[in-house]
Each structure stands twice: as structure tokens, then as C-alpha cells.
Length: 430
Ligand SMILES: Cc1cc2nc3c(=O)[nH]c(=O)nc-3n(C[C@H](O)[C@H](O)[C@H](O)COP(=O)(O)O)c2cc1C
Image (cartoon, rainbow, N blue to C red; front, side, top):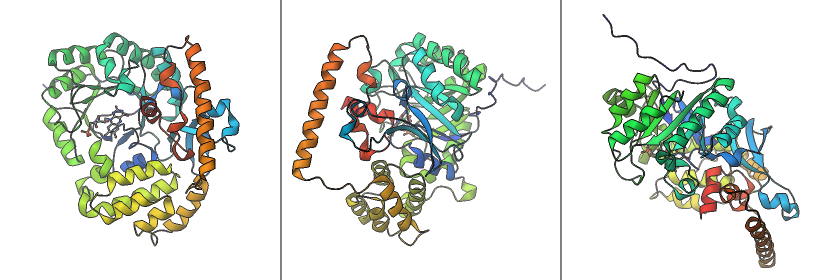
């Protein structure tokens, strides 16, 4: 007689099953909209957005950008709220941005949180527009752990379970989407077993395990010794288990999923530099990075221009995708706008990219006009005055214990455009 089918936590109507999926990892900076669209184009089954901290999305305004057909959650940075004359355009900073059509049913929103009520409030801001909500319980960076978020939650399992249960009941059920969690392994496999056994009982539909312990650095090899055990616990509870750590292609992902008997695989670092890693072998497999980077970069530029991606972010990603020894790398680095970089990469004759680049440069107001020394001194003076004022207010307003981690600094608004909240947090930590 055939063995009985293992149970499965039901996948809600608007949610997605992570089983059988090879997915793009949540990545601050490297997981912004054009990177996610490119991963999908190359065959990623699902994409995670970059971690966004609960308090940062709360209070944003959601609106459709008619230029790009993207949905944006934005707000005025704190100092501009208080002192709008600092920026005559009052340009808002965009905290989160999605393509509702191209990412439909594929996007998982990842949040940083250490508070069930805030997690629910934040999740409700996006729940109708995404296929799932994931809680980051693995980020080891001080900006995350200092607030009790990220990997700090691995040490407060009661709180982590409360967060997940609250999300399942108050967001997952009413919006009919799945709730999931991303953890790291613990040093002692028995501690991992105890933790995972609790997490799978919260009503989550998926669990991703990054196969490194919290202190491990990204270049240290992932440890896969605990993976089968974690997969078994998830399967017995009907929760999809996604593995993460040193996966470099779809083919490798599928082989590892079979070897460790887990349901899905997530790719981060490799996808940063070569998003074609998601392409199935039947369609040609990944492009060889060192020789074919230009094909991938051309695809990336089309998408970055299509969604008018923040220039600073595009440049950062090009820095990941173009091998450092290439001449184009130096030229890209010296570029100050999209038109520059399209020319530097020799893409001016492709698909009208140069014309598009000029239009986007105009929309984004780049390259920025050079300030005279007197204008620079005036800017610095105004920022210092504003900073003093805000510091005084922060010193006196002590009824807000986490104020430090939620204020959105202007420094995070690079080029007057989008900055993910985790970038905001990085800026705060700097
Ligand atoms: C640039 C970068 C940003 C990252 N940001 C996040 C994040 O926002 N949330 C998260 O859970 N993990 C984040 N990570 C960790 C990755 O999601 C992943 O767990 C880790 O890189 C291991 O996968 P890999 O071996 O394929 O790189 C980030 C990693 C990188 C390289």
C-alpha cells in the first residue's frame, strides 16, 4: 500500500506554494524592482523583495506611478516634513516599489520586525498587492539585531512565534495570502530542531533556512548537515521548506532539493552578479558570467530604464554584474547618468536605449547640477541646523523607545529617489 500523503498547510487563494520553486532571495539593494524583474525573466519562480522594516512602511502613501505603471509606497523624509523649503520640489522618498502586473502572484514581501502589532500594521499596508509576507529572522547586522529584529529573533522564539501567529491570523487569513519565515541554523542541531518544531505550528505556509549560523560570514561555506532534519520537520507539519546558502544555478538547486529532500531553493549572491542563474538548462542554462555578462547587463538596463530605477541603485547593480577587470567597469563607474552608461556599454544602438535613457535622465533629474562652493556651504549649514533641531526633539521625546530605528534619514534618499528601508536602516547604523 502506498504511504499516506503528508499533510499540507493549505495555500490561501491569493498565496503561493513554495514547493518546487527556485527563488530570488531577499536582498537589500540587490533585490530592488529591476533585479527582481530580471530574475523573473530568466525563470525565477518567485522573488523576495528586500527587507523593509515595519515602522518605515507604516504611514507611507500607496500610489500608482503613471510613468512606469509601478506601485509605490512613499513618504516625505522627516526633515522635509518639518522644513519643506529645504527642497523646493518636496520630492518624496519611495520606500517600496513593485510592478503589479509583472510581479503578480510572484512577489513575497519581507519585513524586519520585533513587534507583533507593528508587524500586522505594516503587513496590511502591502497585503493586497503581494503573494506572501515573510519575516526576516536571520539578518545578523547590528542595525537589525539591535532592535530585536533579524537574527535576534532566533534567541526570542516566543516573540518570533507571536509575530508569526499574529500575521497568520490578522493578515494571512483576511487577505488570503501565506505567511513565512526565513531563519538561520543554530550551532546546536537540537536547538534548531526545537525552534523549527515550534515555528511550523504557527500556521505559516513556508520556512526558508539559510544554512549558516548567525556569526558566519557570507564567504564561509554553507553547512548543510542540518538540512534534512529541518526538511523532515517541515514536511511532517505540511510546511514548505526552502533551502538557502551557496546555491548557484537552477540545475544545482533542483539536485540539492532532491539530495536533501527539501521543497525549494533560494539564490542570493550568484543572482546578484548573474541573474541568468535561474534559466533552466532546457532553455540554455545560465550565461557564462565572465564572457556573457554584457547580454545580461543589456537586459538589466532595459528593465532599469522601463521602471526608471533610482540611478544609484542601477549603478550599484552594474558594479556587481560587470567583471571588475573589464574596461566597461571603469567607464560605468565614471558615468553620471543613464545616457552616459548606455554609451559606455556600447548599447546606444540597441532598442532605442539611448533615447529612452535621455528621457529617464530628465525624469530623474540626473546628472545633478554641480553646486557652487557657496551653495554647498549653505546646504551643509541648513542640514546641520536641521540635525540639531531633530536631535533636541529626539532627546526630549522619550516616550518612543524605538525612535532611533524608524526615523527616515534624508541620507537614505540617494539621487532624490528610492531607498529601501533596509538601506535606511544601514544609513542609520552608519
Ligand atoms: C546584498 C545582500 C543583501 C541581503 N539582504 C537580505 C535581506 O534583506 N533579508 C534577508 O533575509 N537576507 C538578506 N541577505 C541574505 C540572503 O538573502 C541570503 O540568505 C544569503 O546571501 C545566503 O545566500 P547565498 O549563499 O546564495 O548568497 C542579503 C544578502 C546579500 C548578499
